[in-house]
Amino acid sequence: MSGWLRGRLLAPVLAVLFSALLCGAALLVSGDAPGTALRVMFSQVGQGSTAVDIVNSAAVYYLSGLAVALGFQMKLFNIGVEGQFRLAACVAAIVGGAWVLPPVLHTVVIMLVAVLVGAGWAGVAALLKAYRGVSEVISTIMLNAISTGVIAYLIRPDTFGVLEGNNISTKPIEPSGQFPGISLGDRGTVFGMVFVAAALGFGYWFMLGRTRFGFELKASGESPTAAAAGGVNARRMTVLALLLSGAVAGLVGLPELLGRDYAYTLNSPQGYGFTGIAIALLGRNNPVGIAAGSLLWAFLDKAALALDNVGVPREIAVIMQGVTVISVVIAYEIVRRYELAAQRRRVASEASLTLTPAGPPGTAGPPGTGEPGAAGPSGTAGSGAAAASSETAGEAR
Image 1 (tube, helix red, strand yellow):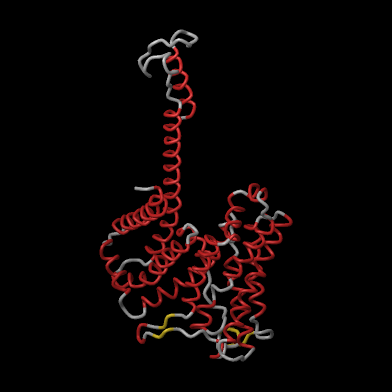
Image 2 (cartoon, helix red, strand yellow; image 1 turned 45 degrees about the horizontal axis):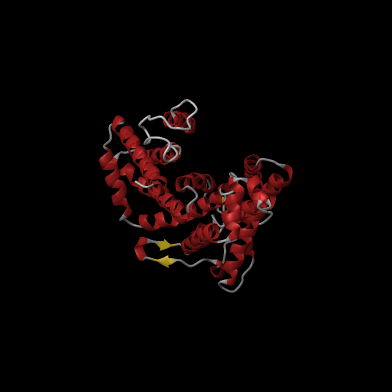
């Protein structure tokens, strides 16, 4: 198996298999049949709106994973995606509910507001990191807590919120600001933002692999010193990476806001930002890998609801999600160490071949015969060179 396949395929496959085996063992210990649980989960996909729900949830997870991956490219841990997406969704809902604009324009304005709020909230941590050396982990965690308080203030009835029964929400967004989806009848409606998420994934791939900015972004993450020597402003790249991460994070809440809820409430979904961290790790910051991780995570979320019908605790899906993340990290580390050891052996072998002696023509016998040469200081030029090359090859190993 080639190194590319080991790096891209072997590690995640091993991780998923290990997590499945561990969850199967947990089911056996609890007296449940693993085969029954898997059969029920897969059969649930073809029933009702489960398949559409998986696709819709995967789009949300994908946006969150992309936001985290953008920071990871610069070795920045944007743990504040949670606060960024929630605050962005809240402000975008307020703006969308307050204005009535022509269709399409109304939706674009809501999306732009979400992007700007997410980028602005991440920009606080970016400036602290770039100009004061404050760890982005600490600052974004604190900003998550602050965003919760800001949201609670913004949706109060005496500010921008309205009281709907026992729940407080923003003013509903008019149909002109909603993002139309694809209706599949009884199967449900696919969010229109699914296609926006796919387009962002393509843009992420193109930026990293086909643009100078993407190269500088990755180079700054790998070695800020080397990047600076090549003329890259590492401080500027730090700010831009976190701004881009926050901008994408601002879109995380929009699939549900513009495709289903049309208002932000106290009960609006949470936790997507932290899930994005796990999915970015699963996908190894690769757009295709993140998509696969998002679909797997969404499948475990939605299909596990049917486990209660056969007496299997649905928490087994949560266990599998957590074990999968841990397994992926361990599997990639094992593969990385294996590749490193193989590379060292290859270098040592090449060094050994390069240092194999060949005595001067006409003065020594064939290599390895030990026949004395004319110019050897000890009378055995061939054997002396062989000993020296052996010692050098040992050091290379």
